Length: 261
Image (cartoon, helix red, strand yellow):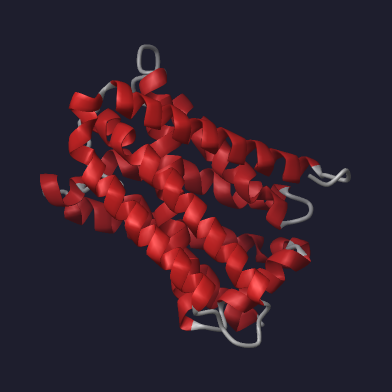
């Protein structure tokens, strides 16, 4: 860690530590409750296999002309996120089932129309909020983030990772992981999950804060979006709604960024 670490970078690092703690805790829970969680292990294994394969592909099939270290870093990040998502999955799915949710709740309960409509509305107003913040955020985006987006948007593989990859692993971690775990922890005095939504959304915002300087425009963008994603997760009774909304949002941001360049 750099001796000149900013507050935003420190917060992002602490979120990473909290994510690792969540992953280990979920893994231990799944092992101690093996009878209840073993049915979800194959899905977790599939997630690990797909994430690992994608990470390997990223590190091998990098775009010529960009630094290889960039693609190695992205591949390693995907590999770590695949591992975290896979270890969270069995315990988190068990917790959500106890709360009346399932991983693909929209399909299993016939609430697909609620999920699709909710995802479009959520992504739409989050995109509108981002557009309102563009004059501030354009000036505050870090140089490292600008280079990252430039590399990712110059190939189809990078675009897919930027739009879909982040949507999947972030929703598994922050909605299926943090929100579900905190909602279960606070269930005795906060059944609607309001406190869990606030804390998990703050963690999500802190994870992105180092992307801008100063970080507060990113807080304004990500925190309310996180609250809406938690509501969509509960409303649609499944994680696919937030993933769809996140992917639509990412796609919109990429398109707007390309138009502004």
